[in-house]
Image (cartoon, rainbow over all chains, first blue to last red; front, side, top):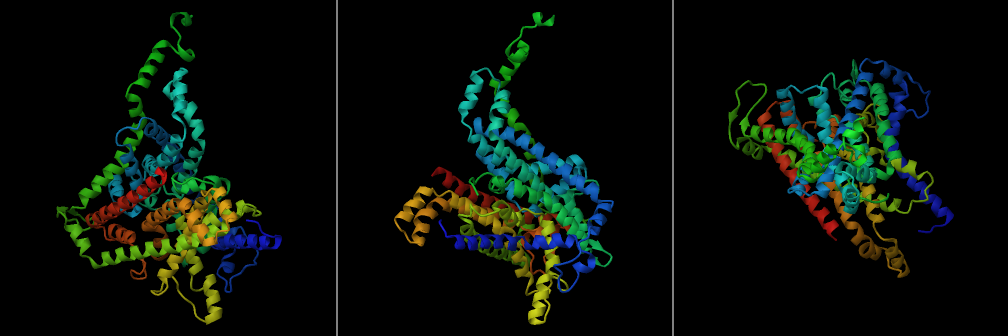
Length: 277
Length: 314
């Protein structure tokens, strides 16, 4: 589309306006994070104010903040790493050996991820209580690994399908073992799939609330649960704390959108839609 | 000098190792080994809870009454199907899915067309980051801070409403407004997703065909109908289906804002399930409801994969 200079400026301004409108609620909370309580509760709303870091300091000095943030990091990262390794092996198997029932298993995996979380949480909760896995690190991490496996398998199978089997044949004929082919020939070629699967499952686990609430506990609490349960102070909701914690916790997902924008489409559609944005 | 004794094969490994690896490679064990971890995960974390759930759904089992569980066959299912509030929640969920997906699709597609050809936008990456942020932030955080925004005494919208009309509206606390307020938040969160899908769909149209259409001076609606739609419709349909599934799943966002209230104004079926299971502790009843939701999800997934197959077979 060719436009004149003036028309193009208006067009670009409109695009920026749309972006800012969608970002405004987040911005309002980010501003609230650096306001004093009086400024936050002021009527009329204050756009110009003296910024303070008191809320951040208060949040950081709470005894639960660092442990819970650490839990978020450790649980999300280790669960997704396990999921990616397991999914890559399975995706390769599905793509090359096509065992009987491949399509059915892929379908089942995906269906499980499409069920409303509230439906799955009841039996999982009862199972965890019965087996004594509730509020244990392995229990939490392995659950989230399973949570990440369906999308990872789907993303990675799409990418392995895209690598011609001739690479496998060439590698095997030249004396490489199957493991060599798997890790040295195929793995480097599906790198974008690995990145997309890793990053987006990381975000999904990072944001997850319901399961952590039910099958976690004091030792494995992550920030979303802490946000939902610790937000009440003596007189109602502690808004400055909520604002500060939300803002800090939203920064990594926002960084993902900024730095991994190319992978956003793959990640949000588990690899079934490809294309440039 | 052990080197002289042990014969060396490929890559400096002992021959027996190479033989073992070759045997492993060629046997049927190899694909099984690849698949085994996923199967274990699937059985332990999906199949066992699933069977547990199906089993429980046939029992009258409550965590608090202390009455031993009793097999009642399809009693729970019949109870759900004859329960007025369950039907209300189902119809609310249907209305919720339909209205949010419809609004998000229309708005998202329009914005997608707006962003089509934004390649030379200054700071495009940053603008898109700001625009796409809502769909990827923590739903709990979003639910919580929208409560701040909707707050009747010091929320921003209420300030302007008070200036204009002299009243304050408790958006999340009133029967008249809660539904719309919650819908607005969902639309805010997921319209960018439909825009993303639209951009992908538009990107799949070959530029040569668009140029041909421009040379032929086709009017814009014919361009859409004959050039853009045939290429983009599958991606758009996949996007709509994904959004339908996700919208059907909505739970924590609403729960954080209204807890399904006031009354049961915003109580979707997933929230009914939550309330029955973790406030009423009727595990049998909620398991049967969960089985029904599972079947719905399987149906949705089948439709999705059917469309996906259509699009790849072309």
